[in-house]
Amino acid sequence: MTQDKLDRRAREILIANDRGGYTVPNGRVYPFQWNWDSAFVSMGFAAFDAARGWREIETLFAGQWEDGFLPHIVFWKDDAGYFPGPAVWATGHTPPTSGITQPPVAASAVRALWERGDQARFRPHLERLFPKLLAWHRWIARVRDPLGQGLAVIVHPWESGRDNSPEWDGPSELIDTSRVGSYERRDTSHLDQSMRPTKLDYDRYVALVQFGRALGWNHERIGQESPFRVVDVGTTMILLRANRDLLALAEVLQCRAEAEELRRSVARAENGISWLWNERVGAYCSRDLITGESADVVTSASFLSFYAGVRNEDRDRRLLEHLERIGRRVKYLVPSLDPVSTRFDSIRYWRGPVWAVINYLIGSGLTAAGHAQWGERIRADTGKLLEQAGMYEYFCPLTGRGIGGDDFSWTAAVWLHWARGVERDSAHAVSGAGP
Ligand code: GLC
Image (cartoon, rainbow, N blue to C red; front, side, top):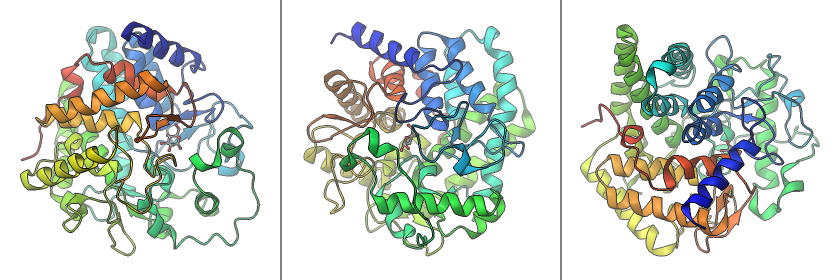
């Protein structure tokens, strides 16, 4: 397919998945508004309709709770095609939402939208969104950073956005599934079971939803008492980058005190990040807050340090060695799990497949960090996958086959914003990068 045709296809997908101000990731499998999906989608829309890009984020924030919490799903309309729906979450919020969050990409998306131009027109949008973004980041700092080091804790694997990553296998053993009861999964009625999380994974997901609901979605208590509390390397890196981007926006708006606060958050995370460095593995890894154990495995999230603006010559070199080694084993970078791992499964969701959004974060981060050849390799691999297979949810790193849902919104968005290959420096630049 030519680039023009792919551009057209990607635009058609976003428009078809638009439900009037918000976009569903995929009409059948994911019929609601998802938090970080919308952040990526906004950048895709902005490539051809800037106002619609801003609207995507504004609609997402219409689901924000009063204390700043931004849910991972907003259920604008009920739909029987997904489990667990609003009645299972029972958060009592209007509009109905889930009770957990997702990686905070939104501030970085807003910065990208802002820097695309037409700033006189969009300044009021930025002014309205800035305090909401800040409130969310403050919520994360207050409720999800128990070590006070800028390291983000997740209380449900879904919060990582990498649902069944092996990083959660060890920490999930503490989840009691004996009282989960019966429920009907909907994902496996749309898609092949071999591509999806297992029954045990799902029992644990449901048990954690029941746990939160039993605590009345009191996030302070969940943050202290949940049987699953893991410092997620992905969320932590994304948050660090988002704080840098929000800082840049605070400077635009001349919000001095807020800028100072964000500078402190960035500095805290830059110092704290070493807690996730696993010297034996030679990579940043998620780490269980309860047991202190490292996930001990290289995943695609390990490479997000470049995107976060974390710089350390020795560690960067070791990460690039991993990338090189992994690149010799797969046809397409970046598999979600190191292919030498015994748990690698080339088609099972976050245990091997390539995801376009993660490639965007890793690839643009590498380019911004001065590793343009790597950034370009990952961008080109992403482009090839989308071109050959279509805008699928994820891809087999060995064959390039498209897997999961087709016509996927965030995959289309990543094409328009990045994978198609027109550099947009401002959206990729990391300001105030660390030493
Ligand atoms: C899956 C993914 C998650 C995404 C959601 C909607 O749960 O793991 O990252 O946000 O689908 O696309």
